[in-house]
Image (cartoon, rainbow, N blue to C red; front, side, top):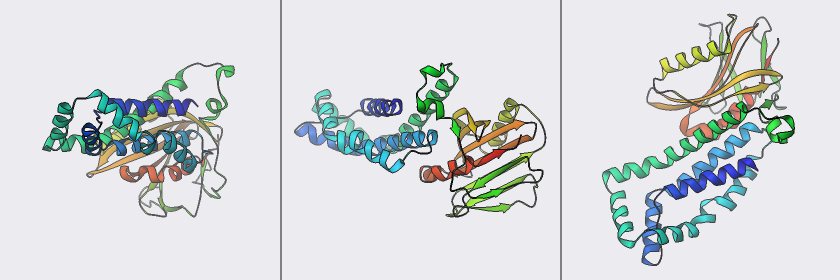
Length: 304
């Protein structure tokens, strides 16, 4: 229920923060404005973001059913008429006409084209910061709901039937062979890559015997990411228990060779050394493949 309330709150903020219109002649103006500002696309992207956030916290979530539920309750078709009415009651016809004219200019088009992306990324940032803050808060066990207790405790998926074991048996990674295919990097014995069956997504597994703190590993990971992508930014961060071991979970987004990419990684530092398991995908495909990426990451088993 907390996640549902959060989705409703953010979608509401999205609607009220974007100028909208409508009623009779004003209704036509409102509809045109909503189309120009891509409000429907913004709402859909926002819902997608939160469906994926909830699914990442609870692997048993049926994303399709959750999406259908949100579409029926707070999706565009569910709120379209109320939104038009709200805008019509808020703006004058003169104001709507002027704003629509602006939306058709060079700068107005740039604004409307980029607004859905900004809204979606803002929603993910809000959700990520909220989750991080909630994890840092000291709640008593009696204060926690069942979802709170299990949200950051992950287990190997049942469909992950094949195991990858590097030399030394320090750790292993279980994965679904129908989805992921390993490819050993001969030039770097500490690095192994996996490619998705569709070819658009990959995972890098890096294992080194050097010991360092998790704080030091985080800095190294960010420094390496910044070197490859100067505009890299962390969009989500938390400590997560994966198959009984605490790991640092980080999501990042940046541009590599003019391609915007999303990264989802688990980072571990301990007596066995440092382990990094990092999944990546082009940003426009991230939502489609996030579930497969999470399944791979949750297959990490550390032998310490």
